[in-house]
Length: 260
Length: 266
Image 1 (tube, each protein chain N blue to C red):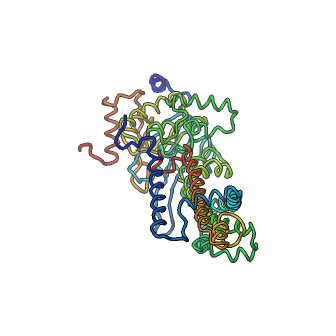
Image 2 (cartoon, rainbow over the protein chains, first blue to last red):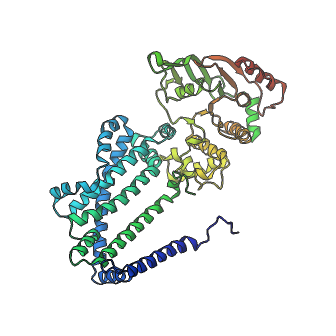
Image 3 (cartoon, chains in turn cyan, orange):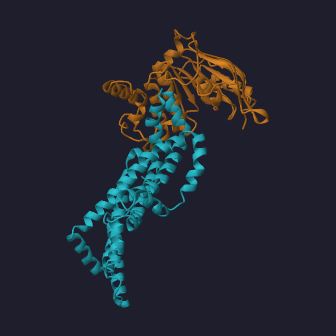
């Protein structure tokens, strides 16, 4: 039974691959046609990538970037989730804190780079601090929002079954708020990955962001610049796909309207 | 299964005259000053142990507020509620409130929902209790299903089973079948009467549906529009299962219709 609207099993893979192939061709002939000797062709980038892999540099830099993201992100989650719970639970606390949060939130994490360098110098800590700042706000705001929007019926049912406040938070509030929280956690992870690259370009001496800026500064190796850019994109995509798997869990999926 | 309910109707309940719930002079005013809303006006009410009482009134009259007061979720502006002689000061796991099916936890399976109030029990006891109530409400085979995979009627059964599983002695039901289609609603009424026959809980049931009240209740408390007062109390002395085309049924229903001030011609 193949309804018209149904996609065949190979389609979700084939079409994106085709798009990618077309773009590569366009890129290749674009470089050829323009006669540029600055911008690399796909083949040169492929050779550059191979060179990075042979020198073990690529894996080390990806590892460094991921390690910084993990540290900053986990710190942001472990501070941000309790803060969000608190602010969502006590409307008075939210009234006090919310204007400050809303004022700090639109400041690009990039603007914090000088502050980070003053505080931590050129070190891992500077980058981790920036990632923490970038991930913290979406996590706090989405948790607060999630907690606030827990239907009162769920709270009342929980109280009716005799739950203590701690039990109510663990067994009712958190699971009920989780779908909204996950949206914030996923956005935060995306931003963290954007910020680590920026941070490494300025306040670090390793990682994919450093690779981009270093390849340009030491000998205008644009093949390596583009190779690093592609690795940044692929790693970000992999992290997002991994995160989306969590949204497919049935105990979470109820919160997403279109998921079936 | 229907015979259990029928027996109850014909044989007098040994506890029938023991007062379970007593509400004295309940008044409720929301807000202060000129914007305040007077919702309940001096309502006194007694419910016997094992009795099935319906609070009936037009939408927005305050019958849900009354139910929230007796369940301990709201404290009244004046008056007090006693259950088994104890002053009610908050919700209690001996008295479970059943919402429309929206009160089912969507992140838990049918089993998880029904076992929600049983975390103090040993694993094997809990499993046994859950299995018993899954069976009682006719959800066998759906233990691992999530609420979003169920129909409205099935979700309502989950919520009733979740309430019954903690073995409460009272149930408060707030228009529990209001969101269901009319056929499912009829089925659920029969199911509720069957469960009531088997478990003998004291039930306070809020509805705006006159037929529903006359089909289910031992007594119907007819409430007026806001501020709600008790307008009339009607004893429905028809044994279950009730013949809803009998003269007695129709007479009682018409009496309530007239009390509310509605002509029964459309």
